Amino acid sequence: MGQATPYELKAQADEGVGHFWSFSRAILYKEPARLEKLGLLHASQEQTGRRRINYAITKKGRQALSDWLNDPVDSETEIRDLGLLKLFFAASGSLAALNHLIQGKITAHSERLANYQAIKQTIKPEGDALYSLAALEMGLRFEAMSVAFWTDMAKRKIKLPD
Image 1: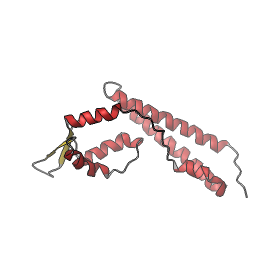
Image 2: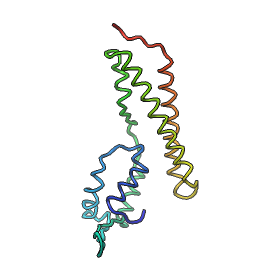
Image 3: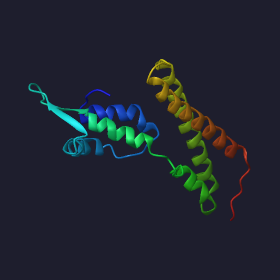
Image 4: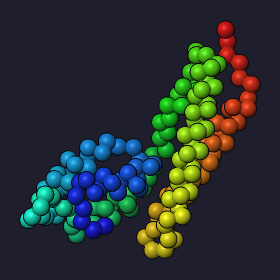
């Protein structure tokens, strides 16, 4: 964790936690200044060029991060999947819409699975990357399970009420 601009934080989030943690990327532009005021980040502005502001975590910030990491996780996993929501209410729709949904989900999860497999090939399994790889492994398993689930749905002969 070196220093970064909010734009660089956004790029890092898109390549990392953005795959499994949903949040507005706008927060990465607003929060650093607030965290600086709390003493959790240190800001330094470039003296030339675009005069971007770079943020780095402070000792106090590292302690806050450590405290947060040590807090127990006792909340349930939250799944917010529009496809599952539509499947839940599919009896009110058409069979064509359901089949379109199922095929779309198979395609989307297959593409994400391939993307995660490609990402895995670029990461050396050593040092801090081992933790990222562990999270990536969950993503790989989730996408493989999702492909299997939606493929199973495609094989079922679902009939909707008239």
